[in-house]
Image (cartoon, rainbow, N blue to C red; front, side, top):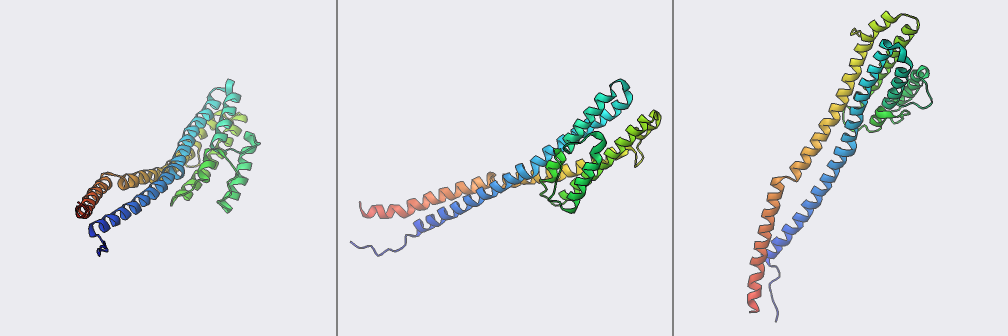
Length: 244
């Protein structure tokens, strides 16, 4: 027995629907994987590093003040300050006296080639994970502000060592640009700006994934499945009746 029907239209449409569904599923899976990388590796890792850098910065700023107000424990607060400075931007083999010069040399190399990040810590982690528009400039402002704040700190310690405690406290607490608290405020603002860029990118990645895999997508998939099943029944039933 020969059948002259070459195309079963309902089953052909069902096949096309299945192919379209497969392509759509693969596309959505690929997009979701990309957005996961953006959300986790590119943005959230930087958000965490910058959040920790900000917390450490406030801690070391407090240690700086304690160094002046508690002379009996000044050496301990100075060591704590250095430890937290290293957590923020680690430079191997330094003391507080040599830190600024060695960081400056590494920062100059980095500014000549942004791919070169010779220091570690939370700031080093961020500078190795630059991804989004404006993030490089924001991170560079953090580096510059941190270097200025460190220079201010050495001036405070120098004044204190000279017996000029009042001048050291005035400089430490001063809010005029060029004084320590003002420069710390600039560092804090730079950290906030950099973190905001990464936070917005994280939120966009999550929102994009939610849109791709949300209720509309699920509804369209369910509708396509219902249509495919209906067309399959429509295409197969007449053929089965031929053999009844």
